[in-house]
Image 1 (cartoon, rainbow, N blue to C red):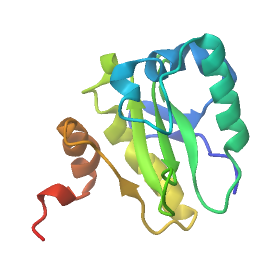
Image 2 (cartoon, rainbow, N blue to C red; image 1 turned 30 degrees about the horizontal axis):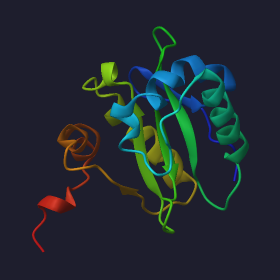
Image 3 (tube, rainbow, N blue to C red; image 1 turned 90 degrees about the vertical axis):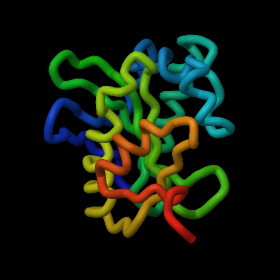
Image 4 (cartoon, helix red, strand yellow; image 1 turned 180 degrees about the horizontal axis):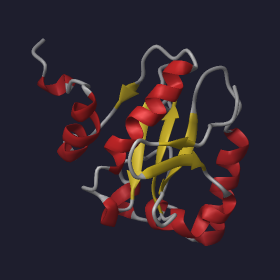
Length: 162
């Protein structure tokens, strides 16, 4: 598998691989309990800038390994180059499926960045041969369902009759 590509969305964003020098922009995401409480146990709250740089370095080393489309990307605004979040397409800690997930700084919530990054990542993954992926959102995060997933045509399984 190749390293995750840089993808420009239709509107405002560039979705690109993380760089070690992104640590100052990544720490407000991964050092914030409002973000990391949804990521455990895969990602614990990052305590400081040095630790964030080490994590980004490890992620960069991991990207490009494996058998199928997967990776971690920074979500960057094109107009000012600010990193506003991250998106992943990875197997969950326990399982063989592929899962998409978003991490956005709380100040960036509600701006549609997850929704805008989703078709960019999905399009790339499907072009690489991926047939499906899962998305998990906590019931306490209904905005994620309505903006990032339902907008893309994904159905909320908690609302489907069985």
